[in-house]
Amino acid sequence: MNVEVTTDTAAAALHWFKSSYSGAEGGDCLEVATRPGLVHVRDSKDLTGPVLTLTARGWSAFVEFAARG
Image 1: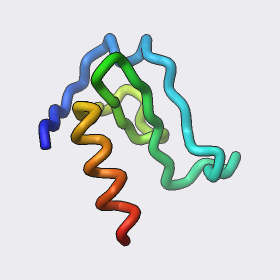
Image 2: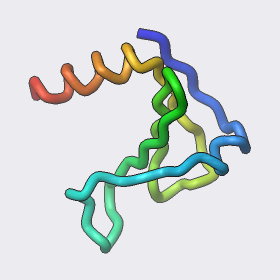
Image 3: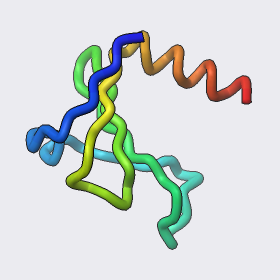
Image 4: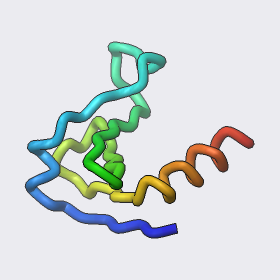
């Protein structure tokens, strides 16, 4: 799986979204943004913190793994 962790300021310009299952009160939420062929993931409580960048294939493998519990 190709993964990169950055603190790239360009990540701030991405359109970030949270799951519709995330509550309005915050808590342990991840935000996701996409670019062609890439998926960026960050902690919703640390908007200027590190960003995990995965290839589309890496993201798919992560989601499949997480779904298995």
